[in-house]
Image 1 (cartoon, helix red, strand yellow):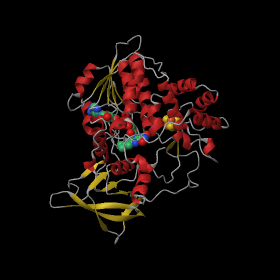
Image 2 (cartoon, helix red, strand yellow; image 1 turned 60 degrees about the horizontal axis):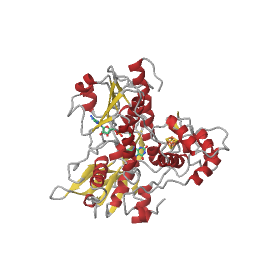
Image 3 (cartoon, protein in one colour; image 1 turned 90 degrees about the vertical axis):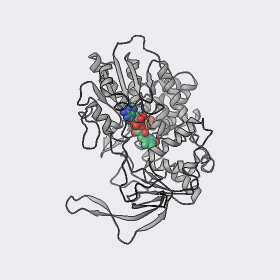
Length: 478
Ligand SMILES: Cc1cc2nc3c(=O)[nH]c(=O)nc-3n(C[C@H](O)[C@H](O)[C@H](O)COP(=O)(O)OP(=O)(O)OC[C@H]3O[C@@H](n4cnc5c(N)ncnc54)[C@H](O)[C@@H]3O)c2cc1C
Ligand code: SF4
């Protein structure tokens, strides 16, 4: 991996593809496993443990250990649509559940996955052929994020004619305009899209369904519709002064930076968005971390990241045993970079904003903060974070990025298609199914399960494809 001091000077990917010798070393380690939990992808204590795609990890590793990268890639491609995305951005649920990880380090499955798919691309093994026979059925996919792309890929392979509609100017969903380029090079998306287009999938960008194009037009033209629109409705921070200029939602900001880079072929870095500014990122999660890393690359003067909750423990608690997902403190790339540049971790825990201050031009110039402590609500018994009196303070701020989570699907789309949503604004289906309350309309990905992970979006995209195929043909071989 590139050194922190070097990588903050650019927006290029900073994780390298590991060499084949390292992959082989890792796979040898896998061969001494007793019972593999890495591929289970089941829920334990409400958290996923193991790969949700059920990638055949031990079999893949065995094939690598036997000397066949090609066979290993083909085994990976049986369960996975886009290893090049997860091999870069997955939090690696497989590694957290790896048996080798109980007493030692886990097998490096994520970097092996990346090495395998890159080997496959380099050696011409990644193919997406147009189907020999078309079924005559037409499917519309609304949204071109990983769930929509995975569904489109399988349905096209099956012979259905697939059109993917995307409201942005380029396809990819949050792979494109959420996750920053230094984590996922956008050429990696384009490389896959070119194959999909060549195989006959149509992409229509700048097409906002439910706004520019009526939902009923789509319903009349297609035999099935898949809503794969994501959960991009951001949670706001509703405090006095919110209307000040210079306060943005994280995804809007990150998308703007990526668009400027792509539009100028990486010639023009939009430094003006953060250069010399004191940046306040609200939200201690992964999106907030991406804002920290991006602000540093744009030459921010300082970056502070607020988190309402206390820090997670450094090591697993007894109540959180393996193979559960480990709820431990993680210092991600953006925070690492902030430590290098500013000499301290940007995160301030148990703190929130109570007010934004504006200057005479209406620009944000400060934020009032207060510390929080956990307190049990006597009526509900729930633990809430409440302000601690006497801890109020004001800090100077020129740019605020709100990364406080997402509130599910956007109403205009669900209303346009007339589908029911649940209490969290996710599109409602029977458990483990993808058909919505409206005939011939299905859903997958974040619009269905709420803001989640790329690997889950791909898993749902593959699952919805099967359900749509079954509905169209009366049987499915997907
Ligand atoms: C900043 C950020 C960083 C993240 N980093 C990671 C990470 O490192 N690893 C990870 O696993 N996950 C990460 N995630 C989560 C991950 O990106 C999402 O879970 C995943 O992209 C969801 O896929 P999706 O296909 O359901 O929706 P999305 O990727 O959100 O795609 C939905 C698409 O639908 C389009 N759309 C919506 N409505 C319409 C309409 N009416 N008409 C046409 N098009 C429409 C949207 O423009 C969008 O392109 C991150 C999320 C964010 C916000
Ligand atoms: S998709 Fe993610 S969880 Fe599954 S094997 Fe790859 S890195 Fe692991």
